[in-house]
Length: 234
Image 1 (cartoon, one colour):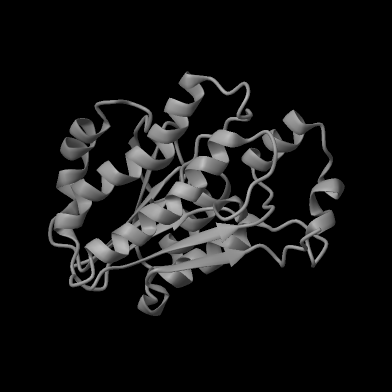
Image 2 (spheres, rainbow, N blue to C red):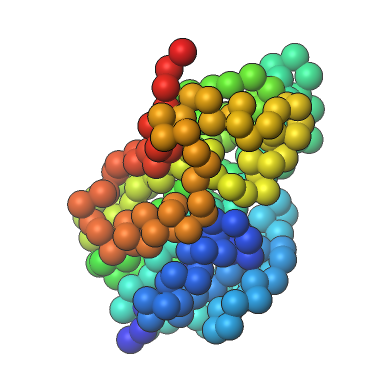
């Protein structure tokens, strides 16, 4: 029986690096996203995580890949990012952020967990903003906080199944999401890292290294793991 890893948002950024590293570690890897991952050997499953009928669609497309697996790992990496404040955020942006960042992982879990044997894992990619907040990114902050609650609930609900879970919370990482956040806030990267103890931005490969370590490390079960180079409180 081979090992299968399913990575949401695996076509770019941290997700793509996770896909690449797991492939090199001998996993069969599936990318769930709207865009194609061009890495050789990856299985691409086109999926719009904002769809209301996502569970019905994925139940059919994933089933052939899930049977007779030694281990299955899910990396919930995909994220819908919207700026906005308590005063001006739109209902549509809130709905889409919640659908992609929280509802989709729940439904994906419901599809896959019945096929998971002991030693499997469910990893959530959170953020430094999973446990703090900054102005003008309310949908992101709310859903990243909720990711921690989802991970903790997953830990409790799967306590007797031998499946481990954790939430990895990157700091300022060189991804499209960070670049969008900086553009919309009118900030430069040098300003963003003022509160970073190591005074540099994180490479996506560094976060992927840690995520792939957690894939087969049960001792992290239930943990919120901050990987932000040290955040300086002002």
